[in-house]
Length: 165
Length: 165
Image (cartoon, rainbow over all chains, first blue to last red; front, top):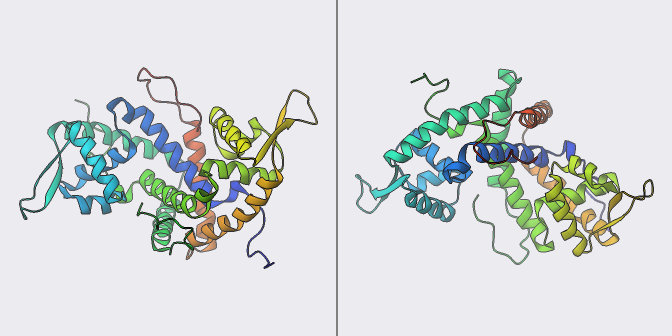
């Protein structure tokens, strides 16, 4: 039997994927319950609206990049947001074949109400961190994300390669 | 109208909750698909098994602390793990009223197979980070988690206060 490359134990309290995941989850759960649930929005729907608020109308492919949501999931989310009257799909002004996604006036008003709450959650989360710690934290998180995006999928186990996240 | 305390826009690419959440999600999705799905395990079930592997049998309340999973969710997860034959519930040796949760031999064998894969995922994630960056990253993530745990819930919106995550 080959010697294991790694220790046979795993200390969750020092295991980076656990430390990251529980932070991502606790913020998303609290923000979801306190700010989004009353409006019927999920975290992913909120992300789409925040991206549209900051950048204006977007083609769906660019919106997928901005939000790290894969295109088939994004398509369903946009359909739900359209049904809620929060976004619209319209022919692009630059190309008749492209569809641009935009906030509706109702969607714009809602996201303008949610963005300050989003900033408050961020402030609460990072309380006590020094500015240079925050810079390091963000830089590391961007690097880890690109490491994982670039990672080759492991030996297939009979299922299709994973979809983009 | 009161002046907003925060800017009216939100740049997702510099917004910490987004940067954390997408990292937590991409690692969990890849590990889930490549290592866990074939065994019928979720990330939360894997966490429970990893905690049991590292610490031995645990009372459910201590297991909740170790895994940051709330007790009612944990109770359901343990039931599923028992049905899969991966863990057992047994009377504690120290108190007849307490139930200790342990890995079964089958569960121990499976987690011994998964832990090295877990370490490989962590190594892939943190590739290129300097040791002191990794220390800062972990320290910041622990601080943010405790900030969010200690955070008072916002003004209630008619729903019960959130459950512990």
